[in-house]
Image 1 (cartoon, helix red, strand yellow):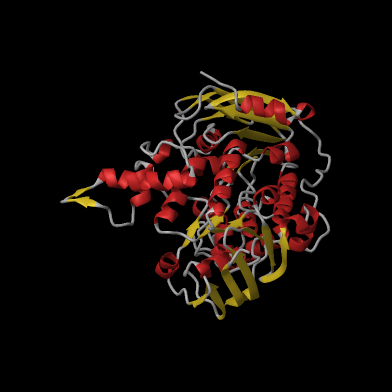
Image 2 (image 1 turned 60 degrees about the horizontal axis):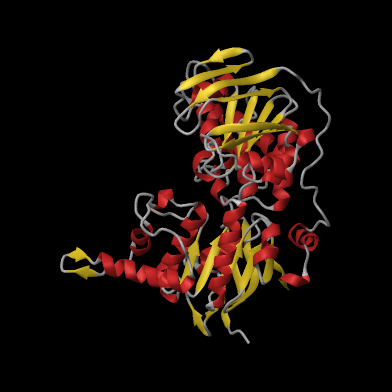
Length: 500
């Protein structure tokens, strides 16, 4: 019988205005993969940060390998053998795998020089133990995303990890890479390592997890073996609802044949000769594998990246892109993939984030340029109500909001303006199943008065909400598929198409 590796009893943590964890119990055995799921704001991140020594618990106890422990700083978590690997694996791109793995440890030396042979030998011993196969000498910038995860896992084993916490490990992986990662995780658990697996993708949880713990509003609502539940049961446990319509039905709009955006022969550093049109009242999807050039293309259209050649027309008027500010004024806005770093100022309040790009619309006078605080709060309150942003107050720093509510704030700040093109880059990454449905409903509402581009690596997402899907491969557009012709095979063939 497997021994208990981690036992948490009655864990409680309170922040101003919210009880993040309320008497939570949790158990993980050696050689077990336990999924930790719940809507954004359920308490998952808080629990993990307490285990990592980032937050301090208010009450409760943590027992690790049979001993009560007090993890009051990250160094203690590391010393115990608790390793935390996040969606952004934080590797130095120009170092190879061996150099990244040794970073932070005492390098073996030969006199005054690093003993590179010993460094490589010890890493090779780990890769053989775990049956990992990839080129250790290539810069990690040239490795696949799945192999970058393996580098992060090897780094954890270098510190003799006994427990791995994986946070959204498949968010940026292709289907093939997901399968490779799962094979390796199953090898790891055979060594007696316990794994806490956090993901919003319910389908993959049934493929990889042995058991599951569900949190809701800071409380544990279920512990189950994976074969005791199905997807509908999990959704009900997480949301309190029997089922959710993953893709809300879009109300019929007067479909227009008028091009609101026309891109012709656009080329940049990461894409070549891109041509497409976006129509009014249309949701146009962009799909492709990691590295296809989708994000780079959209950032160029928004003015964040250099365009070498090509033409962009907005409402039949050719525009010369200079900077994002110019594009916002023109009516094109970008909701970025990395909402925390690129879409929000985390320490600022909800009201300040919503009004930040619109301050020129909130001045008391054109001469003094003083901000009308009353108008700022009033306008922000209307957006919060309209988008159903869940926050204790308008002044709550957005860093304390759930991922779904943060995304609503990023969208909300563009609703002050007369916007004609909304570009969403991975609009639901890191967002739970309930919040996803709300974001899709928001996109449906926006398209009634504008055109919307949705960039996503989730094929079911673009097939579920888009009117057409443009597919990219290696920086080139390999096809545009109409809704009546949507099929997984057809779109994937275009995504894997070899181009010169």
